[in-house]
Length: 409
Image (cartoon, rainbow, N blue to C red):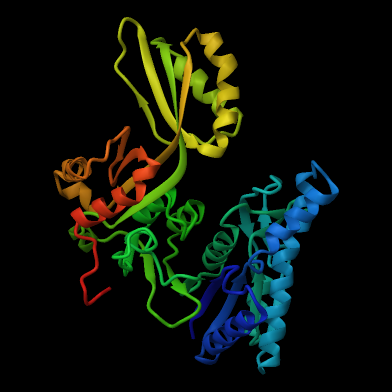
């Protein structure tokens, strides 16, 4: 008998028919001789409707009450999935995050899991029941409902898999797995059978929407291998696991594209200790997410610092920089919108040379200009004009041999 944790996203449970389909899949897993914990999200669109309801009654609802409200989305789903399983002759019981022993800190709307006491869940499993668990939520030490932020249901599934020492964790979504690039951008993209935690982390942080990086980080920390699969069919998915030597034979595993970026440049930054610290501390205090950072070589005691931020955080970044640039005596702040970030990811970079040259040459041949460059041990990222993003992704995807063959397409 295996212990399996399955997670179903909002699209997978978006209608009552889809809920019945998920219930059937869960019940089949148990009837194959497995113990099953199924983590479910709110039905697609429900969370946005709850946010709209909050906005209709308050222009500034507290985070505590938002958590109480948003948690009801998942609670609706767990009840419906449990009802459907019971109607089919199974035995299912629903658990909220708090009932399942998921303890978090008190950071409402973006809480972090601190501990899981899964004894009550195990008791139900040992009694032959299927546990349907609300994703995205937990409870603080003060007994208050908390939510985990974006990707919270994935995190719930992986954390529970670690807590109960599950044999398998399956993340069911509306796609067949992790692809070499977004198939809507690159029609010749292929499903990746296996990918390392580090590669998945880089792709998640570079625009891949299949998994949030926080969930992958948790899986890596606790050694939880998981599979990304489609809930609408029985096709094989993508296994995310520990790195092994055979993985290095593939130089580039995938290409990610992140749109809606803005480039910020601060001119004439004094080349003195503390200048960069002051700039990025101010941005951090304003909750601005800074990504790529480039500083040029100092000339005559001054440097230029450029970095990227999500376009919807540009105004917050500009406001945060007003006082700090005056205080450190730097020059003006320039900004550019319509920027995209293109990343090539693969642990094979560690043992293969010439990757950057191949990528840059392909972009140059296509007439695509590079604005900024950033690298890590297993990733090369560039910023380009958003208008050229799709073509750039197809060019880089092709040059590294990632395009599907006619038989695979």
